[in-house]
Length: 125
Image (cartoon, rainbow, N blue to C red; front, side, top):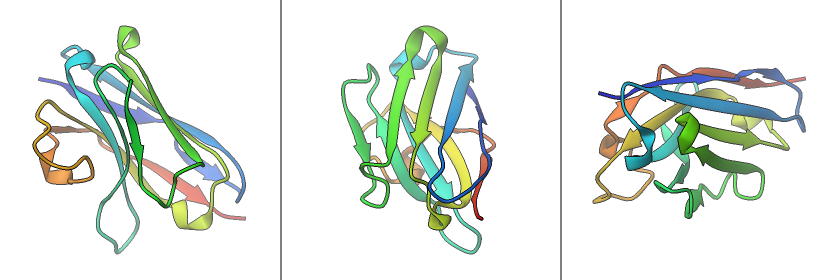
């Protein structure tokens, strides 16, 4: 069983940057596709980005394309989400999630098997 733990969230001003980190334990991460999701207060959880098992393919929601960068280091069992040019509408709890089956689009939360507990990101002046 895979356990995921996110860190790196916090309070940042608009235009600022944060790097979220997702560390896996209990199993190797290299067989899992990893997605980052977020959920703002009163809204549904939405897909932010995902990265393929070996990091060759990364996908992004239109709302973050060009501002966020996902990467992974399988040797460290770690996935990163670099977030630049942050906007107030990026405020949310951010989750990392993993899956081994790819029979659904990457942004379908129900297709992921394991989830972290989330880390709060607040963008405000």
